[in-house]
Image (cartoon, rainbow, N blue to C red):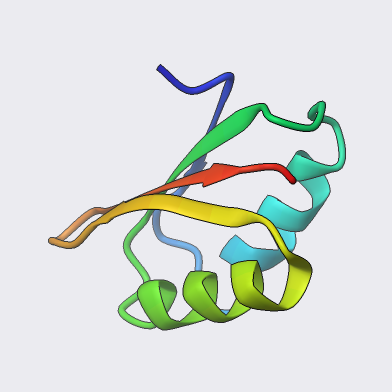
Length: 73
């Protein structure tokens, strides 16, 4: 179970990443955030963002609604 959830459904790039960036700042190191999004580019965006920022993409589920679990590092 994630420490925080974030619904980014119906938001287009770059808004899901902007929202993740704002929300992750409120978490403690080691906490997780579960993000749902419908943007087709979300997987590529979240993978690039976690690599760039040093946070960990713990899991990703693809589908109509995509779900990413990110751990704050």
